[in-house]
Length: 360
Image (cartoon, rainbow, N blue to C red; front, side, top):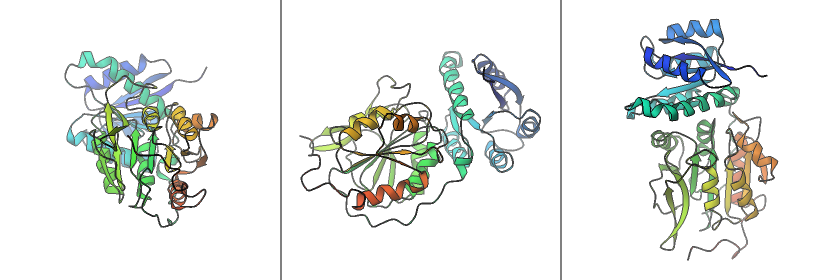
Protein backbone atom coordinates (compact mmCIF):
# COMPACT_ATOMS: atom_id res chain seq x y z
CA UNK A 1 0.00 0.00 0.00
CA UNK A 2 1.45 3.38 -1.01
CA UNK A 3 2.15 6.01 1.61
CA UNK A 4 -0.37 8.87 1.91
CA UNK A 5 0.53 12.29 0.55
CA UNK A 6 1.74 14.35 3.52
CA UNK A 7 0.42 17.92 3.40
CA UNK A 8 1.37 21.06 5.33
CA UNK A 9 -1.35 23.74 5.48
CA UNK A 10 -0.19 27.37 5.60
CA UNK A 11 -2.84 30.05 6.18
CA UNK A 12 -3.19 32.96 8.59
CA UNK A 13 -6.84 32.10 9.28
CA UNK A 14 -7.31 29.42 11.94
CA UNK A 15 -10.77 28.70 10.51
CA UNK A 16 -9.36 28.11 7.04
CA UNK A 17 -6.44 26.04 8.35
CA UNK A 18 -8.80 23.75 10.25
CA UNK A 19 -11.13 23.45 7.26
CA UNK A 20 -8.29 22.55 4.91
CA UNK A 21 -6.89 20.02 7.38
CA UNK A 22 -10.31 18.43 7.83
CA UNK A 23 -10.89 18.12 4.08
CA UNK A 24 -7.41 16.71 3.50
CA UNK A 25 -7.72 14.14 6.29
CA UNK A 26 -11.13 13.06 4.97
CA UNK A 27 -9.62 12.14 1.60
CA UNK A 28 -8.13 8.68 1.11
CA UNK A 29 -4.46 8.78 0.18
CA UNK A 30 -3.50 12.01 1.94
CA UNK A 31 -3.13 13.47 5.42
CA UNK A 32 -2.44 16.84 6.99
CA UNK A 33 0.83 16.55 8.94
CA UNK A 34 0.88 20.11 10.23
CA UNK A 35 -0.42 23.67 10.13
CA UNK A 36 1.34 27.03 10.04
CA UNK A 37 -0.13 30.50 10.52
CA UNK A 38 2.59 32.42 8.68
CA UNK A 39 5.69 31.87 6.53
CA UNK A 40 8.03 31.89 9.53
CA UNK A 41 6.16 28.99 11.12
CA UNK A 42 5.88 27.34 7.72
CA UNK A 43 9.64 27.44 7.16
CA UNK A 44 10.27 25.63 10.44
CA UNK A 45 7.47 23.13 9.79
CA UNK A 46 8.83 22.31 6.35
CA UNK A 47 12.27 21.72 7.86
CA UNK A 48 10.92 19.43 10.59
CA UNK A 49 8.13 17.63 8.72
CA UNK A 50 9.40 17.48 5.12
CA UNK A 51 5.86 17.47 3.65
CA UNK A 52 5.17 16.15 0.17
CA UNK A 53 2.90 19.12 -0.65
CA UNK A 54 2.31 22.57 0.87
CA UNK A 55 -0.95 24.50 0.55
CA UNK A 56 -0.16 28.20 0.70
CA UNK A 57 -2.32 31.28 1.23
CA UNK A 58 -1.49 34.33 -0.88
CA UNK A 59 -1.83 37.06 1.76
CA UNK A 60 -0.20 36.43 5.15
CA UNK A 61 1.57 38.39 7.90
CA UNK A 62 5.36 38.85 8.15
CA UNK A 63 5.98 37.79 4.55
CA UNK A 64 3.52 37.53 1.67
CA UNK A 65 2.89 34.20 0.01
CA UNK A 66 4.75 35.12 -3.18
CA UNK A 67 7.96 36.07 -1.40
CA UNK A 68 7.78 32.90 0.69
CA UNK A 69 7.18 30.83 -2.44
CA UNK A 70 10.13 32.50 -4.18
CA UNK A 71 12.45 31.62 -1.29
CA UNK A 72 11.04 28.12 -0.91
CA UNK A 73 11.62 27.26 -4.57
CA UNK A 74 15.16 28.59 -4.40
CA UNK A 75 16.19 26.90 -1.14
CA UNK A 76 13.98 23.80 -0.82
CA UNK A 77 11.79 23.12 -3.88
CA UNK A 78 8.48 21.64 -2.70
CA UNK A 79 5.21 21.11 -4.62
CA UNK A 80 2.90 24.00 -3.69
CA UNK A 81 -0.84 24.46 -4.17
CA UNK A 82 -1.86 28.14 -3.92
CA UNK A 83 -5.20 28.73 -2.21
CA UNK A 84 -6.32 32.15 -3.41
CA UNK A 85 -9.34 34.39 -3.03
CA UNK A 86 -11.08 35.22 -6.29
CA UNK A 87 -10.43 38.95 -6.43
CA UNK A 88 -8.67 40.95 -9.12
CA UNK A 89 -5.60 41.11 -6.90
CA UNK A 90 -5.93 37.49 -5.83
CA UNK A 91 -6.15 36.12 -9.36
CA UNK A 92 -3.15 38.16 -10.56
CA UNK A 93 -1.08 36.97 -7.61
CA UNK A 94 -2.12 33.37 -8.20
CA UNK A 95 -0.92 33.55 -11.80
CA UNK A 96 2.36 35.07 -10.62
CA UNK A 97 2.67 32.20 -8.13
CA UNK A 98 2.41 29.69 -10.96
CA UNK A 99 5.26 31.53 -12.68
CA UNK A 100 7.36 31.19 -9.52
CA UNK A 101 6.85 27.43 -9.37
CA UNK A 102 3.49 26.70 -7.72
CA UNK A 103 1.96 23.62 -9.32
CA UNK A 104 -1.77 24.35 -8.95
CA UNK A 105 -4.09 27.13 -7.84
CA UNK A 106 -7.41 26.62 -6.04
CA UNK A 107 -10.06 29.28 -5.41
CA UNK A 108 -10.98 29.84 -1.76
CA UNK A 109 -14.69 29.44 -1.07
CA UNK A 110 -16.37 32.76 -0.41
CA UNK A 111 -19.90 33.55 0.72
CA UNK A 112 -22.09 30.53 1.35
CA UNK A 113 -19.16 28.53 2.65
CA UNK A 114 -21.22 25.50 3.62
CA UNK A 115 -22.73 25.02 0.16
CA UNK A 116 -19.36 25.48 -1.53
CA UNK A 117 -17.42 23.00 0.60
CA UNK A 118 -18.08 19.77 -1.40
CA UNK A 119 -16.90 21.38 -4.65
CA UNK A 120 -13.96 23.05 -2.92
CA UNK A 121 -12.95 19.75 -1.30
CA UNK A 122 -12.87 18.06 -4.71
CA UNK A 123 -10.80 20.87 -6.22
CA UNK A 124 -8.41 21.00 -3.28
CA UNK A 125 -7.71 17.28 -3.03
CA UNK A 126 -7.46 16.97 -6.81
CA UNK A 127 -4.87 19.76 -6.87
CA UNK A 128 -2.91 18.12 -4.06
CA UNK A 129 -2.88 14.79 -5.90
CA UNK A 130 -1.57 16.52 -9.03
CA UNK A 131 1.05 18.44 -7.06
CA UNK A 132 2.28 15.25 -5.40
CA UNK A 133 3.04 13.81 -8.85
CA UNK A 134 4.73 16.93 -10.19
CA UNK A 135 8.30 16.83 -11.47
CA UNK A 136 9.48 20.14 -10.02
CA UNK A 137 12.78 20.11 -11.87
CA UNK A 138 10.83 20.65 -15.11
CA UNK A 139 9.12 23.83 -13.93
CA UNK A 140 12.20 26.03 -13.84
CA UNK A 141 14.63 24.18 -16.12
CA UNK A 142 13.09 24.79 -19.52
CA UNK A 143 15.31 24.84 -22.60
CA UNK A 144 15.12 27.70 -25.04
CA UNK A 145 14.09 26.95 -28.61
CA UNK A 146 16.61 27.41 -31.42
CA UNK A 147 16.26 30.20 -33.95
CA UNK A 148 13.02 30.05 -35.93
CA UNK A 149 12.72 29.71 -39.70
CA UNK A 150 10.75 32.44 -41.43
CA UNK A 151 7.03 31.73 -41.62
CA UNK A 152 4.95 32.69 -44.62
CA UNK A 153 1.44 34.09 -44.12
CA UNK A 154 -0.67 31.14 -42.95
CA UNK A 155 -3.18 29.40 -45.18
CA UNK A 156 -6.80 30.46 -44.66
CA UNK A 157 -7.65 27.16 -43.01
CA UNK A 158 -4.49 26.96 -40.88
CA UNK A 159 -5.09 26.46 -37.18
CA UNK A 160 -3.16 25.61 -34.00
CA UNK A 161 -4.88 23.85 -31.07
CA UNK A 162 -3.20 23.37 -27.68
CA UNK A 163 -4.32 21.51 -24.57
CA UNK A 164 -2.61 21.49 -21.16
CA UNK A 165 -3.21 20.86 -17.47
CA UNK A 166 -0.83 20.59 -14.50
CA UNK A 167 2.42 22.37 -15.35
CA UNK A 168 0.82 23.83 -18.45
CA UNK A 169 0.83 27.47 -17.39
CA UNK A 170 4.61 27.75 -17.61
CA UNK A 171 4.82 25.33 -20.53
CA UNK A 172 2.49 27.63 -22.47
CA UNK A 173 4.59 30.69 -21.61
CA UNK A 174 7.66 28.86 -22.91
CA UNK A 175 5.92 27.66 -26.06
CA UNK A 176 4.09 30.85 -27.02
CA UNK A 177 7.05 33.12 -26.29
CA UNK A 178 9.03 31.21 -28.93
CA UNK A 179 6.39 31.51 -31.67
CA UNK A 180 6.53 34.22 -34.38
CA UNK A 181 3.86 36.85 -35.01
CA UNK A 182 2.86 35.23 -38.33
CA UNK A 183 1.23 32.25 -36.63
CA UNK A 184 -2.21 30.94 -37.64
CA UNK A 185 -5.02 31.38 -35.09
CA UNK A 186 -4.24 29.58 -31.83
CA UNK A 187 -6.87 28.16 -29.45
CA UNK A 188 -5.87 26.97 -25.97
CA UNK A 189 -7.52 24.95 -23.24
CA UNK A 190 -5.63 25.10 -19.94
CA UNK A 191 -7.33 23.43 -16.99
CA UNK A 192 -7.77 26.30 -14.51
CA UNK A 193 -10.51 27.51 -12.16
CA UNK A 194 -12.97 30.09 -13.43
CA UNK A 195 -11.83 33.60 -12.64
CA UNK A 196 -8.12 32.98 -13.13
CA UNK A 197 -8.01 32.49 -16.90
CA UNK A 198 -8.37 36.19 -17.71
CA UNK A 199 -5.27 36.96 -15.64
CA UNK A 200 -3.48 34.04 -17.24
CA UNK A 201 -4.34 35.28 -20.74
CA UNK A 202 -2.94 38.71 -19.85
CA UNK A 203 0.28 37.09 -18.67
CA UNK A 204 0.62 35.12 -21.90
CA UNK A 205 -0.07 38.29 -23.87
CA UNK A 206 2.82 40.03 -22.12
CA UNK A 207 5.14 37.07 -22.71
CA UNK A 208 4.83 36.75 -26.49
CA UNK A 209 4.44 38.70 -29.72
CA UNK A 210 1.05 37.14 -30.40
CA UNK A 211 -2.14 38.84 -29.17
CA UNK A 212 -3.62 36.69 -26.40
CA UNK A 213 -7.13 37.08 -24.98
CA UNK A 214 -9.58 35.11 -22.90
CA UNK A 215 -12.27 33.89 -25.31
CA UNK A 216 -15.66 35.57 -24.89
CA UNK A 217 -17.42 33.64 -27.65
CA UNK A 218 -18.12 34.77 -31.20
CA UNK A 219 -14.61 36.00 -32.04
CA UNK A 220 -13.58 35.50 -35.66
CA UNK A 221 -10.38 33.48 -35.98
CA UNK A 222 -7.49 35.59 -37.25
CA UNK A 223 -3.73 35.02 -37.74
CA UNK A 224 -1.47 36.16 -34.94
CA UNK A 225 -4.26 35.88 -32.36
CA UNK A 226 -4.61 33.46 -29.45
CA UNK A 227 -7.79 32.64 -27.53
CA UNK A 228 -7.69 30.98 -24.10
CA UNK A 229 -10.74 29.06 -22.90
CA UNK A 230 -12.35 30.65 -19.82
CA UNK A 231 -12.40 28.51 -16.71
CA UNK A 232 -16.18 28.18 -16.63
CA UNK A 233 -17.03 26.93 -20.15
CA UNK A 234 -15.95 24.65 -22.96
CA UNK A 235 -14.25 26.36 -25.90
CA UNK A 236 -15.04 25.07 -29.36
CA UNK A 237 -15.09 26.13 -33.00
CA UNK A 238 -18.30 27.18 -34.70
CA UNK A 239 -19.14 28.09 -38.30
CA UNK A 240 -20.91 31.46 -38.36
CA UNK A 241 -21.62 33.69 -41.36
CA UNK A 242 -19.02 31.97 -43.51
CA UNK A 243 -16.25 32.23 -40.92
CA UNK A 244 -14.84 30.08 -38.15
CA UNK A 245 -15.44 31.65 -34.75
CA UNK A 246 -15.00 30.79 -31.10
CA UNK A 247 -17.98 29.41 -29.21
CA UNK A 248 -18.43 28.94 -25.47
CA UNK A 249 -20.62 26.10 -24.22
CA UNK A 250 -21.72 25.79 -20.60
CA UNK A 251 -22.39 22.05 -20.71
CA UNK A 252 -21.36 19.25 -18.34
CA UNK A 253 -17.66 18.58 -17.67
CA UNK A 254 -15.95 16.14 -20.03
CA UNK A 255 -13.23 13.92 -18.56
CA UNK A 256 -14.08 15.76 -15.30
CA UNK A 257 -13.01 19.07 -16.82
CA UNK A 258 -14.71 22.21 -18.05
CA UNK A 259 -13.13 23.48 -20.21
CA UNK A 260 -12.10 20.18 -21.76
CA UNK A 261 -9.31 19.68 -24.28
CA UNK A 262 -11.27 16.89 -25.96
CA UNK A 263 -14.24 19.21 -26.56
CA UNK A 264 -12.00 21.74 -28.34
CA UNK A 265 -10.18 19.09 -30.37
CA UNK A 266 -13.36 17.32 -31.47
CA UNK A 267 -15.00 20.61 -32.45
CA UNK A 268 -12.15 21.24 -34.88
CA UNK A 269 -12.64 18.03 -36.87
CA UNK A 270 -14.60 19.87 -39.59
CA UNK A 271 -11.65 22.22 -40.01
CA UNK A 272 -8.80 19.79 -39.48
CA UNK A 273 -6.49 19.10 -42.39
CA UNK A 274 -2.81 19.28 -43.17
CA UNK A 275 -2.76 22.94 -42.15
CA UNK A 276 -3.90 22.07 -38.62
CA UNK A 277 -1.40 21.50 -35.83
CA UNK A 278 -2.57 20.13 -32.47
CA UNK A 279 -0.46 19.90 -29.32
CA UNK A 280 -1.01 18.08 -26.02
CA UNK A 281 1.20 19.35 -23.22
CA UNK A 282 1.93 18.31 -19.63
CA UNK A 283 -0.99 17.34 -17.41
CA UNK A 284 -2.60 14.68 -15.27
CA UNK A 285 -5.33 12.42 -16.62
CA UNK A 286 -6.43 11.60 -20.15
CA UNK A 287 -8.25 14.71 -21.37
CA UNK A 288 -7.29 15.46 -24.95
CA UNK A 289 -5.90 12.05 -25.93
CA UNK A 290 -8.96 10.85 -27.87
CA UNK A 291 -9.42 14.26 -29.46
CA UNK A 292 -5.79 14.31 -30.57
CA UNK A 293 -6.22 10.87 -32.13
CA UNK A 294 -9.34 12.01 -34.00
CA UNK A 295 -7.48 15.06 -35.30
CA UNK A 296 -4.58 12.92 -36.49
CA UNK A 297 -6.98 10.64 -38.36
CA UNK A 298 -8.57 13.75 -39.92
CA UNK A 299 -5.20 14.83 -41.34
CA UNK A 300 -3.86 17.19 -38.68
CA UNK A 301 -0.24 17.00 -37.56
CA UNK A 302 -0.17 16.20 -33.85
CA UNK A 303 2.42 16.60 -31.09
CA UNK A 304 2.68 15.28 -27.54
CA UNK A 305 5.14 16.64 -25.00
CA UNK A 306 7.80 14.15 -23.94
CA UNK A 307 8.19 12.71 -20.45
CA UNK A 308 11.53 14.39 -19.73
CA UNK A 309 10.13 17.93 -20.06
CA UNK A 310 6.65 17.30 -18.61
CA UNK A 311 5.78 18.34 -15.07
CA UNK A 312 3.18 15.54 -15.03
CA UNK A 313 3.41 12.98 -17.83
CA UNK A 314 -0.24 11.92 -17.85
CA UNK A 315 -2.18 13.42 -20.75
CA UNK A 316 0.74 13.18 -23.22
CA UNK A 317 1.42 9.59 -22.21
CA UNK A 318 -2.22 8.62 -22.82
CA UNK A 319 -2.04 10.20 -26.28
CA UNK A 320 1.23 8.49 -27.14
CA UNK A 321 -0.02 5.08 -26.00
CA UNK A 322 -3.05 5.18 -28.32
CA UNK A 323 -1.04 6.42 -31.29
CA UNK A 324 -2.48 9.94 -31.29
CA UNK A 325 0.84 11.76 -31.65
CA UNK A 326 2.60 12.10 -34.99
CA UNK A 327 5.59 13.32 -33.03
CA UNK A 328 6.80 13.38 -29.43
CA UNK A 329 8.85 16.49 -28.66
CA UNK A 330 10.49 18.19 -25.72
CA UNK A 331 9.04 21.52 -24.68
CA UNK A 332 12.26 23.27 -25.64
CA UNK A 333 12.04 21.96 -29.21
CA UNK A 334 8.27 22.09 -29.68
CA UNK A 335 7.92 25.63 -31.07
CA UNK A 336 10.80 25.18 -33.52
CA UNK A 337 9.39 21.90 -34.82
CA UNK A 338 5.91 23.38 -35.21
CA UNK A 339 7.15 26.44 -37.09
CA UNK A 340 9.53 24.40 -39.25
CA UNK A 341 6.64 22.23 -40.31
CA UNK A 342 4.33 25.16 -41.02
CA UNK A 343 7.13 26.91 -42.93
CA UNK A 344 7.36 23.98 -45.34
CA UNK A 345 9.73 21.53 -43.71
CA UNK A 346 8.99 18.04 -42.45
CA UNK A 347 6.12 17.42 -44.76
CA UNK A 348 5.57 20.98 -45.89
CA UNK A 349 2.34 22.73 -46.65
CA UNK A 350 -0.70 20.98 -48.03
CA UNK A 351 -1.00 20.85 -51.77
CA UNK A 352 -3.11 23.56 -53.33
CA UNK A 353 -6.75 22.62 -53.07
CA UNK A 354 -6.14 19.91 -50.47
CA UNK A 355 -6.93 22.08 -47.47
CA UNK A 356 -10.26 22.26 -45.70
CA UNK A 357 -12.91 24.45 -47.27
CA UNK A 358 -14.38 27.39 -45.43
CA UNK A 359 -17.65 26.65 -43.65
CA UNK A 360 -20.82 26.79 -45.69
